Image (cartoon, rainbow, N blue to C red; front, side):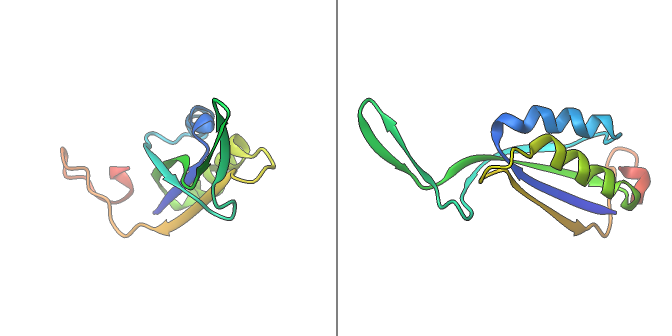
Length: 112
């Protein structure tokens, strides 16, 4: 099993949800986040004054999947979020050792 974490632009979250549903992912967790990468924030102008934004708004999307689904999930997230501009985001993949559905006691891939 794998745990996929994607940090993407907030305006692309719905596209990611649709793309993941399209490849059969049954559930996901979305968390609002702020951070920066290579872009190190940016400046904005509001009412004539310039403001430095050090932490850029992002969303963190987390999904637990079976190993076989990984290529489809990575492609779906990439396709839904890629604009070709700085700040498109990152995808992290971690090994998931165990999963337990609390309600039924199912474990492993059956709990996904």
